[in-house]
Length: 271
Length: 259
Image (cartoon, rainbow over all chains, first blue to last red; front, side, top):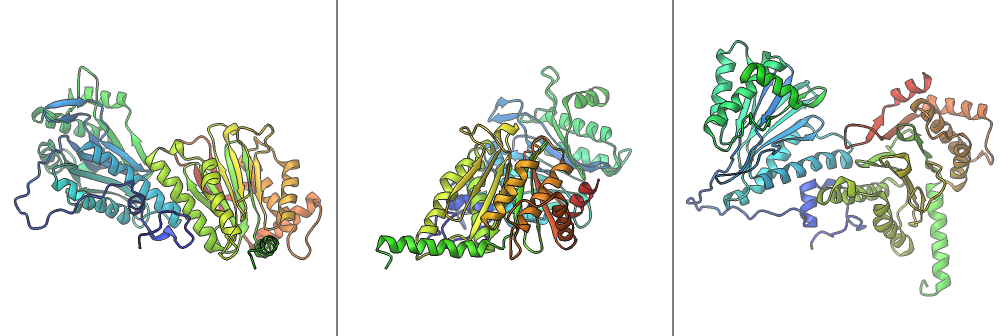
């Protein structure tokens, strides 16, 4: 027998169910078709046209993303937010198909709150990391159809066991990788990875030791470099005064850097 | 036997009596509006009784833990799916109570072969201004009592939940005299703790019938505070976060009341 559709059905308690399962039961979350097994010829186009990056520095984790959204060769939007706050201490930065990515962020945000409200305790960092992994895995059927690929970065602050910032990147199938220093995804990421590797090994300071101004400068330089060769990455739009979105996760929570401050660092260290 | 109308009425009356007996031992809950929001306070020894339902909605409950849990989960589920498919601004306590919880509780109560919900619920929803705040109580039979809403002219901006009628009535009478709408948090905590004490004094064998003297309330309150833990939570009006619910730890409440 199907599960009763009503939360108030006297024989049903939803207490053990997670939020995506609840949405599916109510028909609010589309279930992806199972990926076809054994058809090795399947190839999907990676359409992660953007650049996002994150690295740990002295003041926590910095997460930055350019603002350009593209459809094929066309720039459709130049103020897209790809660095999204999920809760007080967690950021999901997205590369991939915006519709799926934003929906995923929304599901994730509600999942954490739903868990806290129903279970009367905060979800652990491992639980949160795994929740995103599960969403990606559930979405993989769409990816195999050529729609809906999402490759996110997840940055959070673990206030519980050993207070520290934690940073993860994912692949499209949902595998999660914790990194110690930096992560970058999207079409412009090879250049960014090169820069961050270089800075971390042979720069004046290790990334972990940078102060906020230095960290912002490196993030801007990296995005500018990515935009130089990648048409899908907006970088810094000097005429339109559109700057990348930069957020910082620390023990105190999340701060979004105001545009004036980014402009200031840009003028001083990048332009 | 239930086919005959008067039998049904009799069965319902018995059921009402049974539920009232079950609820009579419930520790009261006071919810008061203060300068920066709405405060829920109760004292207890075991179970949590004040809960977060959604960004702007909190719930206090007395009754059977299993029933409270079912209603709480249902409320969270309804609010969460609404907030997800539409937006957080579309989640409304009025709709949650009137369209979902009340009809179901009424039906369960009146179907005399099935189990009723042994629970009494107190909700509050914080608006963008005190005028938009809503206090709402749903009883086990689905009856709703609300403070707030478009048709209400004079607002009291507090609400209580008691195990017995007498306990709730005396708490209300107390707060009618004592409650100050724009009190600061320590004063609001004081009012709520006093109101709780009045409600608790009106229960059990030596239940009071009239409002006690202030000194008697304080004496009783201090005795209770010596053995029971304080559970408090608030809905804050002006915070940068969308989530307005925040719990106050026992020690924090005691600290603030003392200051």
